[in-house]
Image 1 (cartoon, rainbow, N blue to C red):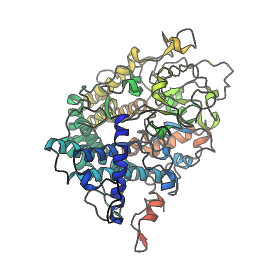
Image 2: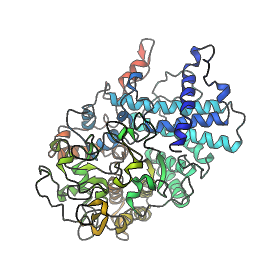
Image 3: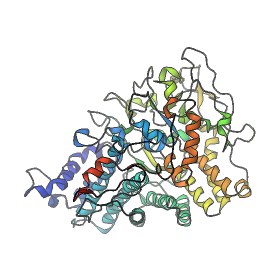
Image 4: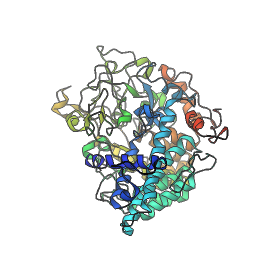
Length: 595
């Protein structure tokens, strides 16, 4: 579903969406427009469905002249709304660049903040496109039953995804579907049941495989449905479904779900058709001459700055607190679940690029060096990470650089999009990958009392991290990356699984703390953390501890404060409240604490 498909249907879905938006104002469509009669068939419906997939990248509503926001306001990776606010990362760059992120990161945002409106518009653009697919499909007469089930299942899966994002961002949001005729709907009902209905339909009606890799299948719907149950604390339902997905699920191309042998393969375009992909947003480099519109445009700010080969822009720096999570106990290879900051990883804060620096010699989880660029450690195949020369303001954002979203030097000809002032890439964003499923499954098992099985799932994830084949290694001949890697690990890696019976012996609370910690390090910088903390009910405790620790080291989050009951959700965009006026009063109501 990459490159050719995006181009093939570009004119079709853009014209069709315009038609649906404007048809009531016209007595007849202009010459050359696509009417319902033209589109009400298999090809027309599929074209609109491709448009609904295209909205996954969040960029379809990002044109500011049309009331949208900048590309990064609505990134599907949620690097602002899920990772930075979850303590995974500092905003990065410097305090004067993208200042609207600062109040979001420190939890005193205003409803007029453009980031909220950009995200809202992008998600409802996706909702609108899925609704148009379903509306038109009802009039198509040339669809076979299995085709109709597949197309409607895909559309309802996508709609559930857009609403899931809206739900976890704002909680109470308007529900609009293909039957809605009055679009100025209130946000006064809980939409969980409707999200679940869409995902149930998708799970029951989607095929297990497709010919095109980018389409969603039955097992992606099953995993997402189980995730929806987990968010609602319906643990028995989640547990049953996760068990089916883990034991029987396959990727869209038919590969049995399992962890990649190498952790880094999750973030390589050349390896994107792998056994760990459950639901991925497809990215493609160099398909738009005007910029990386399909190349992870929402994350284009998030590359090292200064003397780096990327040019721009220095945002999304892994936090010192997050990196400290990767310390392991030298005796048993396990993490320090509650006091990891007492064993802080050595960093180069305040050290210039010309001064010597020796990296931390203690034991570490090897995932640290696929997650954060650290001084003295290979930065993929771009050379040794130099620290300060690649950072815009170390005192503001810290010493580290992002890594999971960075393309390799050897594949930059195909994976990098350099058509504008900041890089794009062909690295897919993984909304759900199998490690995520295993850890959500572990959580559901632990909450249901099956601590042994929960530990088995966690240990599968840790076993992959412990496999030396997937570690970061030093370069041959010191710092000459293109000569390849040596057989010497880049750091003192040591990671082990939890010993037999550990979860059962120490109890549910301990098991959950281990699961939560494992999600932190396995999925770091992938946009999940804030939403996890909120659904676990520990956001206030964890984030205020983060502000207390990190705020003493970097200036970006000083005076940050999380307030339970207010900051669990973001403010409804003021622009949307203003637009909902009816009879002299707004239909949309603001979330508690933001009035």
